[in-house]
Structure formats: structure tokens, C-alpha cells
Length: 431
Image (cartoon, rainbow, N blue to C red):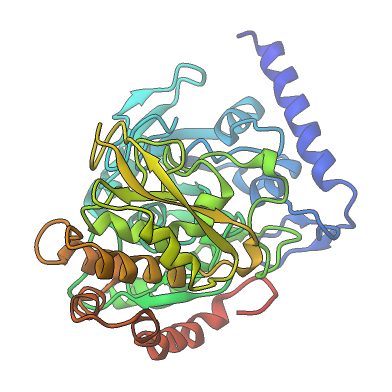
């Protein structure tokens, strides 16, 4: 590609980003020093678009490493890495999380280390990397600033926030600057569910946060920096900056425009999937299919032993925001691959009323009650412990507890988490 063509592409991309932001009156941002514009009602402007409209001045004179994936785009869908490279930001490295920089790998996998053919930038495979490996990546690539821009979906067991946590620890050790280009939490800013307990840390949960944490990645970064870096024996980052989302409030769910939804991972195809995920992903801990290998993962749930009774029992509960359709499907991969499963499709009828943990808990209780074939995956509910955050959920379910008993059991720890994190929130709305 010629230099002139690269400049033309960048100019058109910047114009599109500016078109999103330009109508808003500018105001000063104490957090970043960038010119920011509060969004008009109904308009949300991601942190990446705010930074791009300011010609990426936040990275002037810096050697940048970018942690991102296909969701790290501007409003015109131009990759932030391509846009930075086109304007002359000194991007020395890209760090690919689970599923990879280009998002081609399935769950629990990544794309490996390679050179990006468009930009010539080395893309390091950082999925599962420990802090020492991150430090090695930073030193090898010569970066002094880390940029994080990935669309999270708001569940503790979604691994991108733990990629950020590892990268922050390495930044503390190396003195690197850390910049988060913030994005909305697509399932809203309300915290729900159990808090991870000591002894249940894993790659799907490394710190004591609520299962549905109700925070943006920028808010989590502030919380991790102030609380968890010192608890890990590391100094808080001396230069942590969050480029804030404009026009977002905590009660908002889903994208501002459905056409803007980009799969954060191969099994997260729709905003509805994300809304249900904190609850229906708990079926990963069972012998039931969570819908991997179908076009509606985490919305289609079932097993070979499930029949019409499950949908009937669930619809009788009158759960807000959803209805359950009797469904049959044949997964093409993962559990029950190639086997016809009976089950349900969870249809979202009112996104604002969806309580994913309540839905998932009722689904598990009824499946356990109805079907002798229901069983835990792995060692006596250990996987459920890693997902839910303690042994309690599996123990209660095995003991025959009803859904309300299980849901009530974590309210005290959830309330404490909400109080502990309130001071790190950046956006208005009910918590």
C-alpha cells in the first residue's frame, strides 16, 4: 500500500470518528487531558473515538504496545492499530488475548505470535501469559506505554479483564504507562451475583469481584490499581489514564446501535448473548450443552436427556425479560457434539429487565429437579466452583435448595463489593 493511500484511508477514518464526536460541545477531561465531548442523548462515543478525534495525541512521543482484538475499532470499524499506524503513532507491538488479535481462535485458544501483514507490527500471543512473560514482552518490544482496548461483556469469567490485570501487574514492575480506551459494559452497570472467594482463583477469575461486576474496563482498572496491585505487593501505576466513554449511563444495556455489535469472541454473536451469559454460562460446569457449536451459544441450552418439561417448568416461573421456547439442536463441537439435544432457547423479550443470574439459577435448579441424567462436569462440581466463585453454589444445588435460597446466599458479599467499588466508578446511574 502506498503512503498516500495509507494517509487517505486514515483521513477518511478520522473524519468518521470526528463525525461521531464533533457535534458535542468540548469540555476538559481531568483524567486524560484530552478534549472530550459529552454525548447527546442517545449517543455513546467510545474512548477510542475520543482519542482518535484528538489525533491520538495521548500517545505522542511514546512507544506503544496495544492489547486488543476485533472489537478495538473506531465508529467506522477501522482497527485502532491500523489507525494509529497510519497516523504515525509508534506502535511497537500488539498483544493478542484469548481468541487472538484477529479473533479466529475458539475458547481456550489463541492465534500464536506472528507479524501483522498490513502494518508489519509483531503480534505477541499473550493469552495465559504470567506477569514475568508480560515483562519479557514489554522489554523485547521496547514499549513504554500499554494501551488496552477490548470490549468486555461484564462477567467475571470472561477472560479479557484478566489479560488486563496481568498487563497492569507487568506495567507496575516496569514503570510503563497504562492507558485504557474505555467502552460501555453491554450488560449494564449493576453488580450482581456471588463474589470470588479465596481458593477458587483460576484463569476465569483471579480476584475477588462479583460474577456480574457491573463495571467498565476503565473502572475495573482504577479499582485494580488502587486496591489489588498493593494487595499483590506491587506499587500502584504512577501513570494510569482512562479515556472515558461519552454519553453512557449505568442503566444502559446493549450497543448504542445494533449494527455496531462486533463479536467479542466467537461464541458471543449478539447483544442478547451477552445479557444472558453471566447466567447461562454456568452450564459450562455441567454435562449439558451451553450451545457451543450452534448459532446461538448461551441462548440454546440442552442435553440428550432433556424434553418439553423443562421449558414448561421455566415459563411457569414468570421470570422477567425472557421466555423459554422448547428447542432441539445438534452441536457441531464441544459437549454433546453430533448428538441431538432437547432443551430451550432463551428469548430476550425485555433487555432492561433481564437478570441473568436469576435466570441461570432457575434453569439449573429445574434441570437438576427434572432429570436424573443431570451431572457436573469434572470433579464433583469443581468447575462450578471456579465459575461461581466458591463451593457454595454446587453444594446448595446438590442439597436440593430452591433458586431463591441460592440467590439470597450471596447478597451480603455482593453488597460489600458494591460499597468497596463505588469510589472507582466513572459513570452516572443506579448501581
